Length: 263
Image: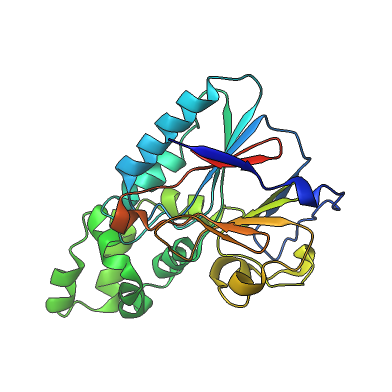
């Protein structure tokens, strides 16, 4: 059973369009009201079955009213859960009929790209909950390490087993989406800093002081990255990472007009 409340009303004001920057990941902007409904989820972390089920619920809910709909994924598609490869394959395909889908980059996604490009970082990366990701591609990393395989051998295995199209997909992901006064991002934003000046690293990694202070800007930030048992409501922010790999709950947040709800 979902629920809904009016969370957007206090921030109904004009916000300038956000420009892109060739030196950073893309930042996307749409006008308020461009979509009849927006559905957001975050931190899938290799949980393919839960991702498919969330899409089923979204399609069922969206069938009740007309207009364009949008699905926003807030990053961290890999690691922890068992099916990272299937998650990336699913998200790189066409979205459901009648939907657009924007897939944003999270810190775990960016780290997988770094590993693929520089496999010598393998030990550091494995400490980042990456073992399950390699397993999902059929890579027995424990065997490779126990056999004292060198970095060149490990690099060759990783590049042979992980499709480069998955890496290029991750490299292509934007890092922020803005619809009117609502900002979607993986981790949060640096409080009080103009959105045009936000660093990719902060957008993917920040916790404090954002969690306590909020954006300190006239926006509502929808984010993941910091797990909790249930969605968290802070100062002008909503966190929707409910640790699906541990809890089995992949939260879907909905925005319909000025009404924000949990599906």
